[in-house]
Image (cartoon, rainbow, N blue to C red; front, top):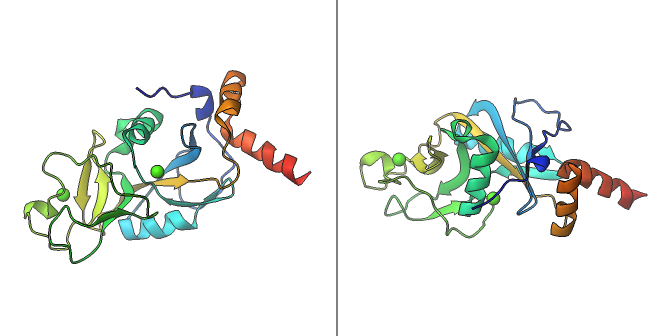
Length: 194
Ligand SMILES: [Ca+2]
Ligand SMILES: [Ca+2]
């Protein structure tokens, strides 16, 4: 069972952007930040918008949920209601022979962990790949559903800071001090420039 270090979930107010969003939340397990953009968009538009967002020096991307640990983190950090109908960065390439064939992440990460709801992916219940439901949203229990690319929804943005991922030992110390990961990363950047 994964335990969230609450001191690292302090809302970070450094981002200034167009779309409304919930504050970036730090996952100490992988050093990534996550936010939920609460301006509805289609998967296609959300994918473009996520790539244009920058936080803590890192470009965003539609969130990729590649492990149970990552899903548990998001469930705890944002709560299940916030995850309902949430667009994430999984998609199916066109022309597949079956609803469950050819799924991939926008980042190119290995496709292995999945959390499909019972009966999904189903291409709208037809059971035949018609290139209709080739994108993923979460259900109210965080299970996955394949939906059309034009279905609007809030979307998950993930950031992988390149050089500012705190070491685990430092995180333990920061947790004790109640310092947010973002503040720490900022200080590291300033220290490097000095
Ligand atoms: Ca991820
Ligand atoms: Ca479906």
